[in-house]
Length: 376
Image (cartoon, rainbow, N blue to C red; front, top):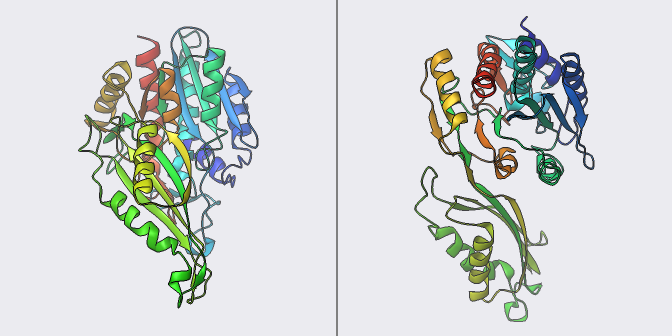
């Protein structure tokens, strides 16, 4: 059994449902200490954040990952226990196999191999892990980035191990992400009997025209290297459960994924103008999940592209699609950021899996990129 497969299995066996780390970072930290890394915990609240470094000064390359996973859902829907790593037909199964304990294991092996080969390397090689990526993402990398900004800790290059590939390993390289902005809208009405609507005010009826306008709007035509921004309603809740009662309020949860043509504050103002124009009585709570970012042409994109061509024979598509990742908190520090990981086909699903041959190739990819950035 390869070392990266063995470590991935050990991590999967720890049921680290967000924000519980379940001992994953202690396992990684002990290995890295033995390899000569300086390891510290930068924890906030119930969230564990591991920061490990080797070398000092110079440019800083950070491997960025998370040890938390989403809940497995009904365990009887899985073909094998989600927290008992299982190998079948060339795949490793288990919650977090692809998202992203496989990549975390590959980061650790790449880091160990790199410092063993170059013990006096220039610059700094770092690993940052959190247990709050799949959850609220409040006390994880967001807080660590704030801490780094205040303390003057730089990060020049960052590789995130999110599962980015589509059909084959390395065929897609994420070079940016859209911003994310969420809102919880509570439209206030007056509860009453459905037979006497004149004595009530139905918040569902009031909310529908405004929501229809927001849903129908084309927010933009896209932005260089970004798709168009989108508005999506994800939840609507109202009613008492009875069919003869007009509810007193209606709650709507929605989200924007937006490109650099917008800032979160501008979108908030646009939504609030629509609600005011429709005369709604409402409360609206906003959560700014992160602004959009883009890593332009530079040393990191060039290094990743060259390594993927040399080791895998692929020319990656480079785009900004998908959801969000913790890279959105590192990019504002001035870092060049890319996301490179295994195939994104089973994440968050029943029977999550990673191809064992992909897993075996990841450490060499990450190490080769580190060599191009820190040794050049």
